[in-house]
Image (cartoon, rainbow, N blue to C red):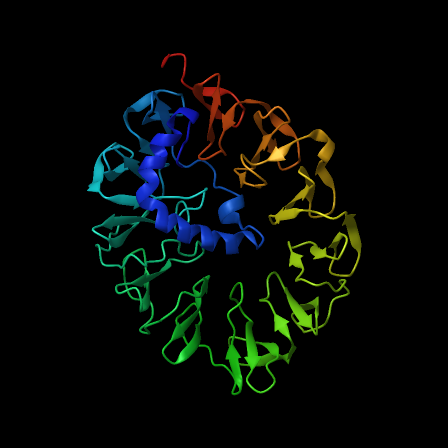
Length: 446
């Protein structure tokens, strides 16, 4: 994780200049993700895997163990979390990046740029993904578990943020044509050549070829689409597939076996997620189940969002939390924004934030005067804790029950990662554990 102190913001800004075009691409892709329920890869970080933590002192980073003892000396201007089998990205501050092992040994050195993570998103997942390395405008990937390195084969139009639920990665050598390879060993997944950046999930692919859109299952087999129907690009991909009739222009659903299980009869449709899909009938959006039966969920002007327990339905002057059988769990007044995970809903209204679970129980009220995130409205649930800010501008942490487990005493703070969080007070940098105890600098380090 990239740590940022108030005194080092300009320094890190300079380091990250070479990353700009790819962080911009990442931000566009993340915007799509944030419109969907956040999955476990982002909301529920894994339990701490490595007893080594990047720590800063006097503007330089090294690594400390769980006891707060420095085991790899301070020497880098950036040091990331150890990932996968024990690899971390570091930066010397002289425009050169490297990848090290938990012993501090260099696997790669003098690399122009390494793309490690962005706002807790790791390419392909923290412990199952890749590092991207750049040299002279070409890119290569290194698998964080096997250590496989592809070589600098790929164009600077390369998509740096592969799906987190598959080992497939989309690569391009010329910026126009794409292939899918396994990032564990670089082997080719499909013989086809693609021409677009579309959808991939759990090994299933919806992508463009010279002959049009094609759908591949997780074994790489082309999914047969019935005559007169075409697959449609929507927010995600899964079984069944959203299809559109060439004759009527209406939307329906086709299974991976090639059967049209829900005939085209909707003006628009979204993909099935957790057994339900949002569909548009004329100008109103409703919800159907896997049989095509319309659920008794109120119709609205925009698609409802499902969290596995209830739907969030936006009406003209209010927002409803509704069960699939139509039971209204809670009615909310007009909001200025809502972010969701599978378990939680963060609600913004007139500059105030509140937190609710998916059953409609209020966990944090507006009256408590807590804002989520370090800037604006940002629900980052990392390792079961969320960063909050009080009316005095000081930071603390709330758990998933809405309890303030870390008092708002810090002038700056970051989300938890690998069991520790970086915090600042009176201009000094500290690291705390999940018990909210300062673990670095330790008394011995001081």
